Image 1 (tube, one colour):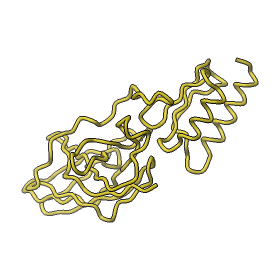
Image 2 (cartoon, rainbow, N blue to C red; image 1 turned 135 degrees about the horizontal axis):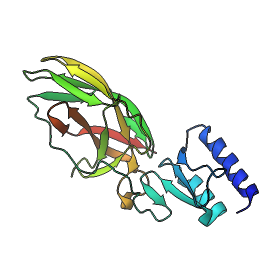
Image 3 (cartoon, rainbow, N blue to C red; image 1 turned 180 degrees about the vertical axis):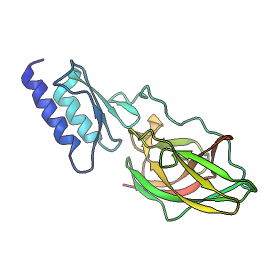
Image 4 (cartoon, one colour; image 1 turned 90 degrees about the vertical axis):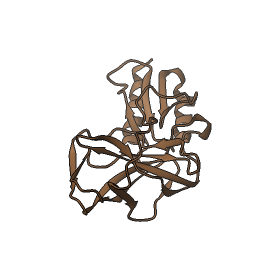
Length: 214
């Protein structure tokens, strides 16, 4: 590989990092490493992935959302396909604060209301947002979630008995099922929020509706 090609690819990745829509999720710097260079793209950026694959071939290892490109085999990263138990509705009620709509392959920062309807205080452990998965509204099969790096800080939210609090939720539509493609396709879906209760474990909420649009 010539220095010129490494510089060319490095310049392209620099532009993509600052491009509107932020298609780039991560990469190895061609100016400081050896091929193949890893490039991770947002789930919606399949056209860009095709262009990079056609242009650089074996010099790059491309990942789109939760899958390798173009093989569409799962990446070796931890994804939340294991479902924790359902939260007891006599302890916690969770509901969306607005109609949820997200573009296919994109993600949404929204808010949910978490009400402590039990008799004891609750502390919810987060990294600033509660995580979620997109699921099939009929079967409950996990179909997608956010794909990308997140802040690893610990942020706690406390809800006293009878208190309702608002917490930001991260809702993603990067597909976890190869048969769906790289993005969960448009349609009427559902999402479940995960609640990590301090001293008690991890739970999921009942399904809440979400619309995925093209």
